[in-house]
Image (tube, rainbow, N blue to C red; front, side, top):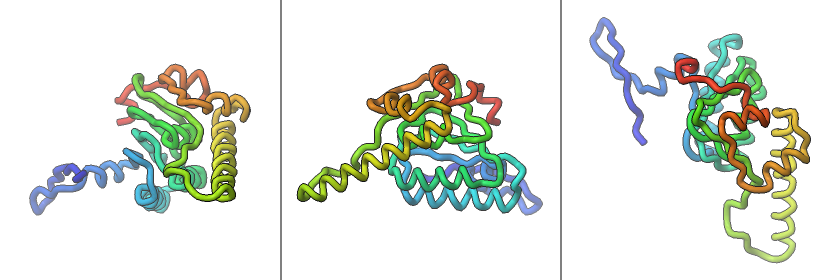
Length: 196
């Protein structure tokens, strides 16, 4: 998808600036679409830049994602947790799977638009499983370890027990904004003007 542009008037005339650059200048970072390695690397660079600029000004991470790769998501999670600048997360549409995990881990506020939705489930295998019995057992054990890790992260950020999280992630569990606040996945429902 090509970037949209924003017009900036200067003494030399009108310059076109990518909209994402303009929003980044206002400390707005987006997690959009499928979460994968390239997007995770771009996210890290943006958070790093904003931390270099200020460790006291908050960063707003706006999420509208169906989820994606667990390893890429965990890398983004580590960056959010380690950021010296406070990070607030916003669900602006849907935050499913790893997108929901990233949303729920906001330490300095987790906000949802009224009609936004979260979805939690167990980690899924990305590819068809094949190979000998030992390989399949190894994949299964790794998947169970990943499930435990994700459930631990969600338990930490919601105050729920790992058993409660395991029950909530045992199937595709969708949460309205109200249900997300009730389950401690979100802190507050806000209107769009609060983001701007």
